[in-house]
Image (tube, rainbow, N blue to C red; front, side, top):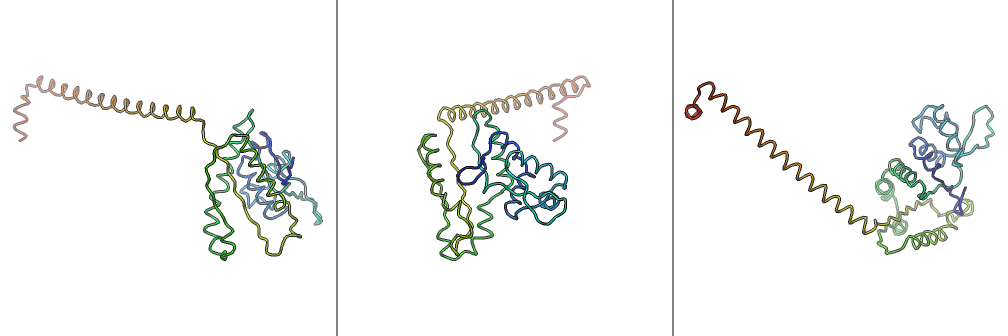
Length: 245
């Protein structure tokens, strides 16, 4: 299902299906290069044509890709990405699904800001550079207020996100917006975490003390055993020490 921005909205099953490096690579390649076949996609996504075809069918089950019309003839099946993008949010019934997809995306995309800094920033003129922004703002808000904020931002994005390229101004450029809303943990959770960390540190210290005590005890036992052995052999430890000097 696509939302008002044209993004496919994923349920928990869709999140789990997409949380795979080959599927993410397939979707990214289709969006960047347009419709393609499993055979053409295979070299770019690191899988064989048959495996790529299998992943494409799974993506289609969750509405992320679909058959693409193609006038070239032949028996090849062509695919295209659905919508302008995709989005997801944690499902209370299966929060792990969102975590998996979030981690898979972070691993697949790498440092997007770093890539922009190294590859694009030095090519921008002063006007475009002044339009580039990066913000790190702390807020004090409820979960409902954050959802309302996200909705308000989306309303502002609508005319730009759904703009027909043919109707865009001649100086318009593709731009990526990265938006993270990262709530902190509850105070009680943070306190419990700190207490757990402190307890772990204390346990580690106790374990280190125990190891040191055990080592000292073992060394003492070894010394005592050696002394007993010398005594049994009729060796005078003091005389032996004097000879060593």
